[in-house]
Picture (tube, rainbow, N blue to C red):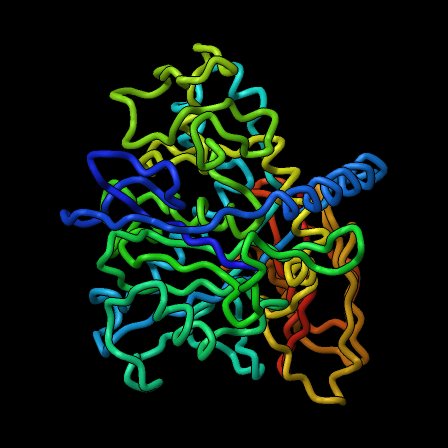
Length: 444
């Protein structure tokens, strides 16, 4: 399956065939995009998979919140951390925080930009969360969660900036981590107005093989992931307006999870989502004020409601990208539940703090329930020896959200109220003087 590039083109004439966000990050003219689209055969197989997944979803008693572990490969040429494209940890954390807000419909700017009832009624909590990996593929604890800094010269690479062909042929194959355990995001400096691009998921087709794109190439594990321009990542540090709200990552990961651009990359085209309006072209910039209705330019899409320029899969500026729809959620949930490499991510343990506990510590055990929980949590701890221990609840960034200390005891059942924290994935740890153990917890 071929990769799909999300290229930024900024010409006086709009390129409907471009794959990406339609504004240049620099004051130089953009380049034409020649990205191939996914084939009809690919989409037919996707629709079969989607229908099957929807039946399973209807039969389930509870929804599934999928978790995606992330590693950011920051490619630099020796700059001090926080300088130029060797971006700071704070910038990475701001991006993972924004992703969790956007994919769980927790972003505060949603209500100000989505005033059309036709749009707000189909807006979705995608029930997908993200966490920063705590360990490398070798099991080593990462000094900065979710960050793999790579100096180009250490790999024999040329120094930045890069074009996509060099990234695909050289950088990705020589730096990727197992894509069945990590979402690989390469953070690079590109001087051709590219904000980012992604590799579409490889999907099983009805004959139980896999199907790729129009050219039948690409889709390899060693190129799987997302590429982001360092100035279009997160909402702090090197992030530059109008791409400084972290929405480029939401857009590109949308492609990585099987979403097309909202106009189907053609004049009034099809993005295979029934609740996104048909649009003649993709948006640019933002309306003068929030909630303005823009005509779609297509007879099949009346005005109002007009363009859904608020959608992450349009080309709008970051500040007015604020929503996914129910149909888009269904596609992404299908990918997470069934697609090659994507479906294994939810069971990946690379976001867990490594225990490194010796055999004699097997006497330390605990259970957490209910899991998933709506806020009420019980931790039942059992120790063979009387000792002190601490129960902590950590978020995906490794930050302590709740903590309870127990003194000189052999264990017992402890209750915690988590109803005041946001839904998502968390970790519960029980730590003694000699080590700790950890369990994953989903808060709904």
